[in-house]
Image (cartoon, rainbow, N blue to C red; front, side, top):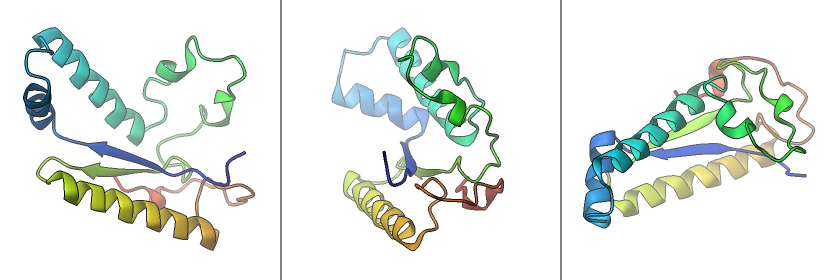
Length: 134
């Protein structure tokens, strides 16, 4: 029932992520938990680039009414699999927030112009990596 979908992965290097966790939640993350947190981030990066990267994370034990078949056959070069990557490693929070806000505005404009690859009624669901930011 959505008019369109856009995806942005707000990311940070593993070194910076570990540092931020330590600074924000000192003593909360032992080495094992920190490694698991970094593994989760690595999965996000891989899956953002290629829908075939561990789709089981979504699919296994999920709500039976979910229509995963709508995207499980896609490949990394399919225009519909388009994830914008925002690396916040060396940026202050305010700059990252500004970049996300700018991206949201651009995606809304893209939807209004009829060029959003994942939008209701979009007919050109053809493959092509042009829409990717990787």
